[in-house]
Length: 110
Image 1 (cartoon, rainbow, N blue to C red):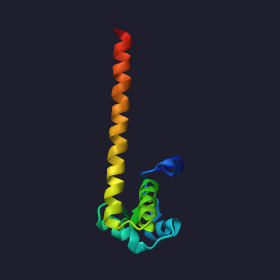
Image 2: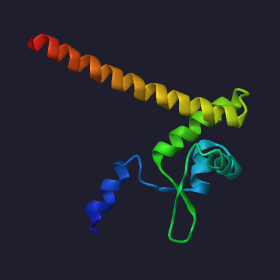
Image 3: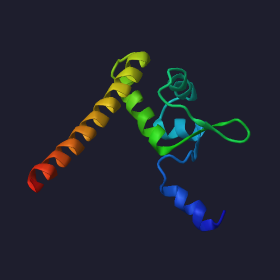
Image 4: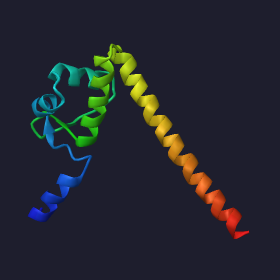
């Protein structure tokens, strides 16, 4: 791997760049909270060669949303479910918008 390859990963939201300790520090939470998110299958960190959990920026954004909900008094199980449903809704809206664009192009072409 060249240095250029390594640096390109810095822009990759899915690259597992953060250790559990660093992720917890960045989020202002505990490592136990991150473990709990994994137990509830909200995020699944990748493992380093030594077996340590590693988190991506995308996973940290999800964890931050979970922390926000928990801080507002939502039980962690419910927070995880809410985030999954929010993600599903966002994907459905994206697909619907894509279908609307395709339908508009089809209508304009006929």
